[in-house]
Image (cartoon, rainbow, N blue to C red; front, top):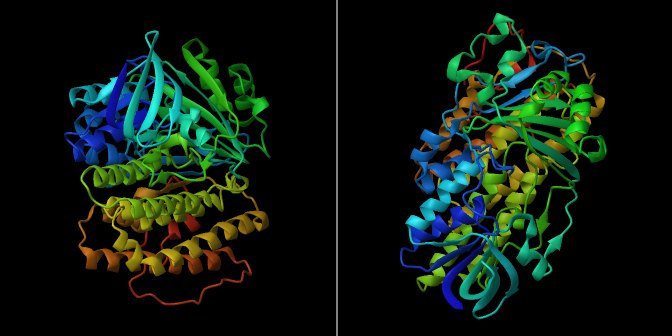
Length: 539
């Protein structure tokens, strides 16, 4: 049996289903088919990475796709990212330096139960006349005019032709393999993760009322994506609306071999050595373990993402960096928005071929710019002097370029890139310098273990920069704020370098920017006791 579609999407997970809905919004009459190998509905707490969203992904799902009602009613709010740095033998959470907020950020983010969310997306696709076929086993792909996809479903061989084909098949990566687009990633790290069928609340790890203060009710720390940090590794804890908790161990291979934690028994032993409180929580709840998976060298790349020959790749089928900072949904949002624009332009008779080259280049620039945040940086993760400053710097870079562009709906505006190419290049140079500086600072720092609490929701530059992502900016205001963002980061370069006391050659002139925030990280530089609320500078 042969079918014909305007668009075939290979894979009915988060990337594929959200792309189908985005294309339906733009193309109400298009024929769209989604082929998914697994049966639906998926189990809740499905065993997938990507439960934690940050600003771009949250906006994409809630606002751009119009799914906010479901997310608010059936998923969990997220109290930001939270980090705990080493403190002694890590047996007392209150003795560890904590970086996180005591208020929700102005821009909302969410914890997504992937099984629940993907089931909802599938139902939404079906309600919008999108052919969603589960248990479809793809057998072959032919790229041409039209493309052909052969698959087997219910024991019957099918062939479907389409104008466009998009690979959202995850690590099966049909198109990348078929077209020879594989590319080895220099970022070598591994992960193991599992779910417990109950909520593990980090708030219960200490009975100290002063440590618990400010985190009552919906402000409980367990609503955060919690990161337990150490030399070369981090451990995540993410609550899911279905009542489960997602836990994962992520480590650079040079510090921790995957063979040390690639089973639930080994993971428990590894946690006992490095994160004993987490090990205790796991040991007490072994009967609640739902699943376990380990993956070696999770970072993947591709030579190309989008083509003028009417194919594209989204999600882990092409590019995946690192789960730290939760960027997976962001890159789905970037890729899907570029692809949806290309497909709409083609099916409505507008030019798309030159844009396919431009979008491919921009997407990869976002990817490789973000890669500098992770590559060769795991050595810093357990450093409570350097890593908190790096985290705050990384936030501001994200909110100043890729996040800034997407949140202000400029992703597909080619003129925005052309008008601001100088600013983009300068920001890239600033960030490249700082990532190298953080490594040097780490190697030469004293490696003390301060405790205390850095409340990022009380740092004006952090809260204000996040809030500005919600502003509606015309072209003039967008450019002025972009320039202010760069000037602010340039000022911070000198502020951080001066604070470190290191003799470093900075390849930028010291320039005074009147509108830039001064002493922006003062309460992070001078970590104060959690017994006293910090006196913060004003912006």
